[in-house]
Amino acid sequence: MGAKYHISPACRRRSASRRAALVVAVLPVAGALALTAASPAGAPSKRPAADGDGALGSYYDQSVDWTDCGRKVAEAVKKTGRKPPGYLKRLQCSRVRVPRDYAATDRGDLRLAVARLPATGGKSDRIGSLVLNFGGPGESGVEGLAGLGAKFTKLNERYDIVAPDQRGVGDSTPPVRCARPTARQAKSLDRSPDGRTEIDRLAAYRELQGKLCEEDSAKLLPWVGTVDSARDLDVLRGALGEDKLTYMGFSYGTKLGANYLHLFPRKTGRVVLDGVENPMKNSEQTYLANAHAFQRALDDFTKDCTKRGASECPLGGDAAKARQETRQLFNLLDKRAIDTAAGELDQSTFVDALKNAMYSEKLWPDLRHALGALGDGNGAPMVRLAGGSGGAGVRGGGVPGAGVPGAGVPGAGVPGAGVPGAGVPGAGVLAGAAEGNADAAFTAVTCRDTSDRYTAADVERAKGEFTKASPIFGTFMAGQMLTCTGWPVPGDNASRQVRATKAPAALLVATTGDPATPYKGGADMAKELDNDSVVLTFESVGHTGYITGDSCVEGNVNDFLLDGKRPEKGTRCD
Image 1 (tube, rainbow, N blue to C red):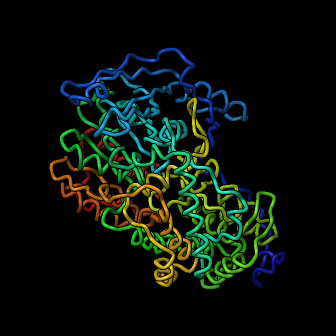
Image 2: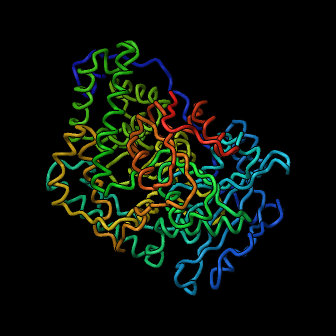
Image 3: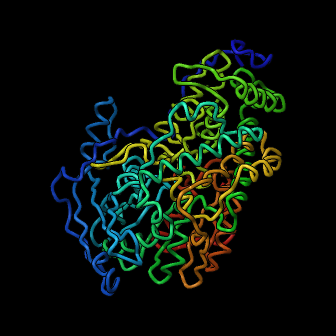
């Protein structure tokens, strides 16, 4: 590492390697997809008979009028000097109306932004619509589809690929809006709090965030939970004219999908859950599991790095010394931040960078480069890996949930790689978007979905166990327990009820080295669903499986969605 900051006496070198290609190229879609631009792109979909009744009937009976919306995105890509993917020419957009409150439809409506890639095969080959959710919560499905459409080419031959922004998220209206605390209010904030004073500051900051969200979104916050979003999926299914919902959910999208199975077992078709959240754990247990999992992922990175030797690894060739050096960096940045061309590099930003790089092995070269640059006195690559905005401000960093790499998620993904997630973080795709909405939506959905309201004393009690789980990520994950402290709307645990014995068996994809949704979540979700769902094990590191392009995972998922063929129990992809 570099001598400039006197970080470590280890051997130093300047990395000659350039920054590796990002997991998914940025599509400059902000504002590029407008609902008012375009000519009609397809006939309105008709709902199946007997969907909805009484006050809900009009929602199921609505028409979905599609308009072309990908051409402006393609034009924006061209302006960056890159060739836009061909599928953007087929991208279509619309909005679907849902009730704010399913128990009292006279309280008004919400409108979900929805994107679609029509099936490319012949009409006789078309199966129906495949609905996607890329995770979060807070992930834009519209942006995810605009950025990741190529990942679904095979499925798109026979399915219309459809991706909505769930209620309160992205371009759906109204969006969750929360003013950010000022830089002065965020000053001296430490998201990896070591002692009671720092924990108290973080708790007070979270309470302030809650007040600001209440000021801006009080009328929406009670209605953004996963249970309501699962009901929205059924309205979308009906509006699309489908008898049953075919669905693929990633990360948080697995929780949403499981809730649909629980609520609408007889309307469930083929369902794939990839990067499975664990429904059996409360918030503290989930964050603790994440501390263990992220530490294992960092240890895997360290082993891989040091095996390359000092010529390629800025941490040297000894794994034990490399782990010690990483801890020294962590501790040093707790005492003083470093100004860089990309912003301030402090301990919180350093942790974000490490955490983001654990979402995909394809980002490990970026992390090696950033560590090497830091050793040479340049902390900017590390700040960019953290999401491009240094400093201690609470930007989300949401785990559990997270999102599929390449689709963007709260907590500042690498722009373009979006890890967690990517695409264009916080950018609006449709007219009227809420730019920067991802973090606010993440917190709003997370806090509506749990009754857990931890205090500073709870974090102080748990900190020792978290630090034992991970000397790097432990205090950060302990601090995440305060996410809903002071939140203005009460939450409940209804979304953890996923028993679906009457629903058809789903296919669950669980990655052994997944830091955001640890591997055990797959087996626990299958147990809770109690409907003979099958867990496909992916022997790999990183978050989710299908998007990686692994031929074994992709083949098994495609066989299930296209032909209904589930893999045998115990099937493993390596």
